[in-house]
Length: 326
Image (cartoon, rainbow, N blue to C red; front, side):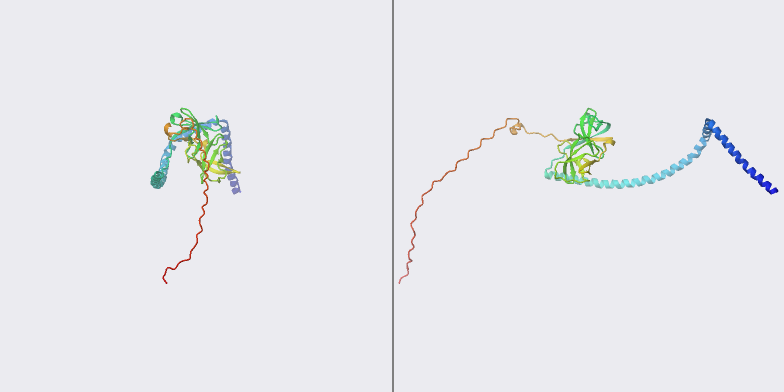
């Protein structure tokens, strides 16, 4: 009996702290709802009081973390240094090869009396705006006439050709993009050097108009500027041929919407020196064209007189005589 009474009392004592805890939790929840600022101020005060201790404890941990990070950085830098050395060695090999090939090409050009390439300079510019006037897709650069930018010059970014300068001010230039419906440039499609026209139509993929109906191209062919007309330099990367239904389009290498720094290529042909007017034909010298001399009359055929036929006497054969003595 005594043992059962002790167990009941023990079970009752074990339930009492749980009830107290639940009551305190309800009271704290109600206080937290009623006076939120009081707990926030208490939390801030406790944090301020513990901040110096936390900083003191955190300092050696930060030092150890930096030391471990520096060890990993040392290995990373060492690996990158090895890669850079290998790339530098390969670049030196290509440099030597390019120097040899350049000298050989100059020698071949001298033997073949090849015409040298026109001089080409580049002006670095930054895109400062984009506009839909006067064309639908227009780019504004911070380089103008004072920076040797001229209308008609090609504009490129690090990937490929973007468009052409069509208007220049003293300090700014306006660029018509290759995708604009008013853009037309001559292109060459490799392999085969197929000549065509790249025509924009206000889409991301300009059209390809072949100059020869018998020319054949396929998807994946590379497109560069042909240089026809002498305004754009030949060989500028433009894009790749893609199949579009029954026709072909060009996937441009450059994305004008994300271009920031571009180059304006100054492609200058040397001026041709004409000979003096005294050495030119009359038409080239600006004089009245000379009339061709009248054609000479064709002489009449000469008839030769017929000669009379001569009658020759008939030739008679005589018997041979024996000259030997009897």
